[in-house]
Length: 122
Image 1 (cartoon, rainbow, N blue to C red):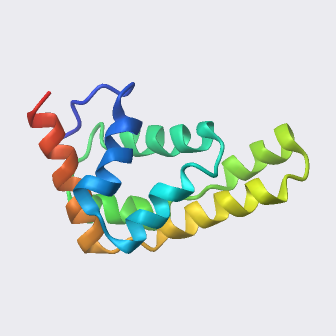
Image 2 (image 1 turned 180 degrees about the vertical axis):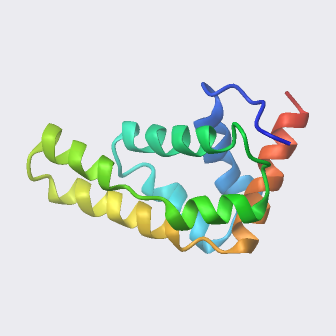
């Protein structure tokens, strides 16, 4: 099944899923890092994830491939352009990116199930 949730609500669904759907140590790192990064970085990540599943099935394997390939370099270029040398923001984005890249199949299975659960209840 491809994604049927509204793109507008997708960041909120993923944010909630990190704590209620996954609830692992790694998901806690990701969830907390969201509060340290600029909102547009989080929204950009969610938009990329949302767009990825417009023509793909929502599965743990497909989410795992996406998270392992997630590249925040475009976000970093924007941070440099908008914020000059904001080292703290760059480090927070790096923590977020590394945590996303470190997700394992158990995490992505829980996240896929959370997304499917939300789809079936909207």
